[in-house]
Image (cartoon, rainbow, N blue to C red; front, side, top):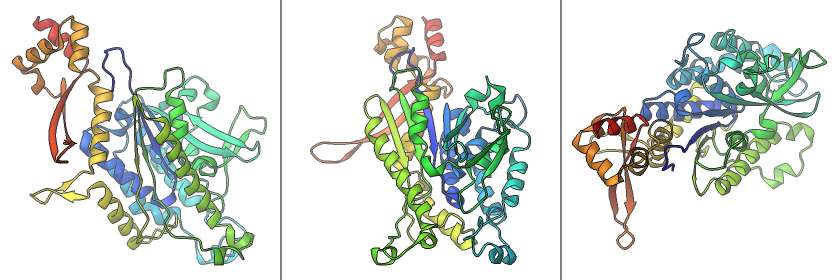
Length: 410
């Protein structure tokens, strides 16, 4: 954590791909907004997303009105995106099932439902208008290379300033499910980009988000929150797979690639983000639910909600109210401290030329610690070494404006 007024922490959010299981993402994001009282776009400096995670990243960073700093959507509203629109995205008629042989000779779904939904949610909003930096993944199938949509680039290079609806369409064009996206591009000789789902190489975009965060700065004071769409638990048995050909592997291999990429990125980040950084990965085991990314049946959506809820709120207090996951609560505290209360008493003292103990006394005497716009008090628990008993502790962090208040009091 930063201890000097000059430190500049960076909060980073990474959202995995996973189709309808993006419902899990939206529930975690709703819990973060509820716990912090802040919109996602205000909490994070950078949001990276792939596929369904890319759609959420864009939606949460879309301004309510041009030039406004208020986001168009709360995370709770995006829960409805899956609840009420899943069957519109993943819809196929009986005639389409027959024409495509169940998705074997052509993409499984028409993109019309998805494109209509993206038009409704994003309208004509452009990438440069994002309220925070966003990084959205896709893959260029004609030039055979990863393709990144960056709002930071869109703000300075008009040719890269695409409509959000087009960016969302590109990142979610999962092979075999939807046809590739054809995005207008004046800066490409062909006049367009032919793009598919970024999950083919970065279903978990956390490592990309990290490299973006450390661009031009030391790799420290990074808080990276990474949320997955569920850990695959159903085994692919050797006896079944040993006889599979292309037709049998076509759908399972996508799940294997997406799941394997997500896990490997998590392992790398857990090793990279240690000293002077914070890394929080949230994932649920997909037990008792359909792992398919396109199962939009209401009973499956209810099961996904229940599964996510058990991880987000694993316990209840004495009054029967749900208690937020301890790790998620800690992550929320870190996000608030980094973004809004980056100074401890020592840092305030250094800025004011005072011993930090005098600063603490002054703040308490003036009751500045009761002003939530100036002070954030974090409550946490530590285990005693000998007994293992949990002991409650508190630490206070301050907004930069506290320096002026203390100076004025002196």
